[in-house]
Length: 496
Image (tube, rainbow, N blue to C red; front, side, top):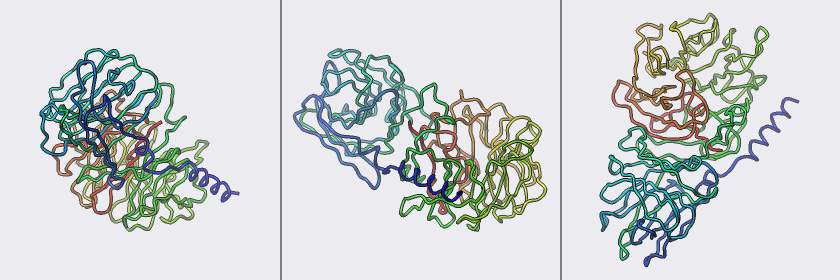
């Protein structure tokens, strides 16, 4: 019976899967305002990049001329992209950017985040059909990343430059229909010239409504890979099913993630998931990971203990098998192996307080490593075994800390206005990647359905750089997810 249930669960999972290019295939291009020189676009499937070329006198006054690559979207959404002009250009006021538009009419109501050839960047908008275009200029010039959001009848423009957090340029209220056009644009500001621009990391995300609980109504999922050297993100898998927390295998050939209480092996070459047999452990959460020798998989699964159903840590062979219990007490949430595979580190609740513990890999007596009031979570060894990184709320906000493996010399690593969680050291020991929530998110909470950042920090200290802006949170990057060569990171983003 158990095998039959797993078979049906896996079949439903596969039926709900989608092509990784689906989001991009919905975009189509058109000239707005009948410019003399026609535009066009190309989509590079391998790199998931758009190249637009277009002309047009301008996007300004009472009417517009430009080339627009868009799709129809209903309700609230967030549209984001990296962008750059291609070529030297002719007119300093040529424009590229992201736009939300009520219709294809040349005089339609719209808002955009426009980047000019000379670096000038602004929120442009037209409040009524045929009305004058208005503008809110940004102090930042020539951003590398732009984002527009529709939230009810409010339209917001944000941008980022040189890896800094998003800055809001402005927001306006406009009356547009429920279904609008959202996408990328280019205008040459010269009727006799065609200009080019490139857009990548293009993401259209539908946030949850206020009444949606991320646990009760989990979102569809996008499995992504971030190249930290180039900054390019690749969507490798989309599914209507909610999946979480990818681990990268030690041989680099597959990922492991959880969904619906089960674990899956995702083959990176074939790009298909395969169910991992975890025996009686069928209530697995997003705290799991592969041993350094690549042979074992640590899992955290709901288990009856003293009349409660709590998370208990087990190990299984990485290919699947009968779980072997590691922790007797619960709840215990796994987060890391020691580099010699002799220890597990984990977050556990004991007597109402959440702290970091370690335990021998074969089980035994657990050792408490932190004693501060409040939440200590997400412990993970550095690859040389000298430190355990973890996140703690003890300073008043959630920050990254580290300590010696015996719990001594606890020191704070990050200190800023963001809520920083789950610092994962790269295999070469050079970097930490973490997920950062906005300041208004409660310090001890890492919820679903948030605008978050992935940020990169030198392991020896230094400036923190934002390397991805996304809609996610819980499940995005809870566990170790670096590629073995330290060049890429796997993570989850979400959309409704």
